[in-house]
Image (cartoon, rainbow, N blue to C red; front, side):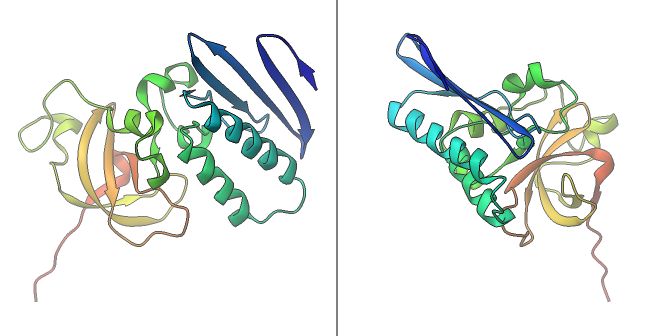
Amino acid sequence: MASSQNGRAIVTRTWSARVALLVGCASGACSLRCVFGVRGFANAWPIRRPSLQIAGCKVAAALASRAGAGETPDELEAMRAQLREMGIALEKDFQGDAQGAEKQPLNGPRQYYREMRGTEVGNAFWRRKFEGAWGQFAEGEAGAFDLDDLVEAVYPGSDKRFSAQVKRYTGNGDWIVVWMDDLPEGSAQASVVKTKDMKHIRIQWD
């Protein structure tokens, strides 16, 4: 454990992971950064409430220490949900972004969970946008789908397709879709999906 006047750093090694909690204050705004050596977390977003800052440290530290203690995936996912609710950016929610880690705070995450509602991370997801025309009368990938089209899309990180509704084209072959099916517990409510992983739902009439 190490400490300084400007902040506190707690470094824990467990489960082949390295967890660093860096807490610093500047202009009244505090930020918490959590980094897993095994791709657990990305750069955190500002946390402006000290109570959440402290809680974030406790939850993240607990997640790190319990990762090697035989915790079930459901229990670990529940702790990740707490971190999302606090507005902490988890690396897994950004995976697959072609822009790279340095651009992630500008682009927002590629997965939106209900716990993100009202947080800066959640708002960043919905700020993804495309400056040009898209939809029915657009050309190229931007015209592949239109607002509110019903599609079957591959859930990110899996090979399974689920029903979804198109909400926005964000460029580079990326679309924001809202999932309509009952997905497994702990799944995102909305995701960024590639054009190649989407297809229109075809209705067959008897």
